[in-house]
Image (cartoon, rainbow, N blue to C red; front, top):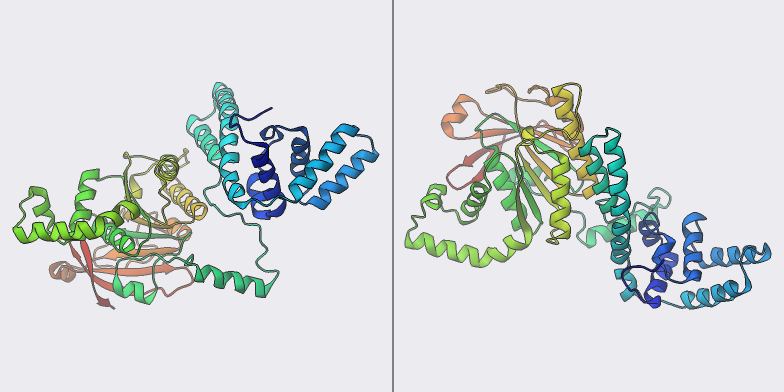
Length: 434
């Protein structure tokens, strides 16, 4: 069956050539591709051998052709056409076309899976299936894995190859460590790596949302694409906080637009310098209260495919307002399930995730470890970093708070940092360590 894309036979040969020459491309395409992608019988035959019988090279294809010829499974016309096709493909090397092949293959598969998936969803709903779970599964099937890389290398087998690859990764700037926005903390232990989740817990009004601004500002200035997800606060309030954080103009001044001449000039100067960077590196999404990871995944796919925004850092402000994607036996298990879903998303999307979460009980003046808050022990086991925001009465008078590193995977923990939240300009100033 011919495709809807009117692909030339040369382009279809490029897809086959790339599959036979590039193992990573082969593993990316294999789960999605079917013989119907190709117009000619020889290409369809080769595709079936690669997918159904795991032929991953020209030699294996040639051996299978000989075997089927001896067993008279193919006629002479098809045999001659296959020989000619294999010769053409074997000598082809058109990377400029092949680099684009994966996108066309995925587009074709989306059109196939969408119709089939909608039919399967209607059948499951008729049988009493959960609509949210069916929708989430359908989106995953269509969009595929979030990660662009296929895990097809045995990293243990060859030490030299492993170290060479690691050095190449570092040289290309692919080892990314996000910033917490706290200078002393970044210098001591740094922020999360891509694929890690860090959770920051604190009481109401201690300054978690301001901390989120500090994180977003620091990572944007470090040229890391940052996706800020707001659940509780209005979108306009978050955007005004960012304007305040970048310009240093007081929040109340932005509210009333009562700028002095000097302030107006500073705003203009900052925006001229940063506006392009903000447009390229910062995306703010406002989701409804009681949203779930299903909604976040849907928004993630939308900003990637519609707006071509591929985040490296994700900030989720107020995950305690979220609902689990499916029902759980108790509230505690439900909120643990939300954290498990966030970790799974973080690993697949290969992003550094910051969670700014609400404590469920008052811990003022205490040294808060992983067991200081209700439900937090289960959450602390899931995340890679667990930091609590605490404030004693004297610290409240001083206008400072203490960040206590209760858990940190493979790095220092039980460290404390004194910070001063600047509510007027939406920033965190680092005072020092404890």
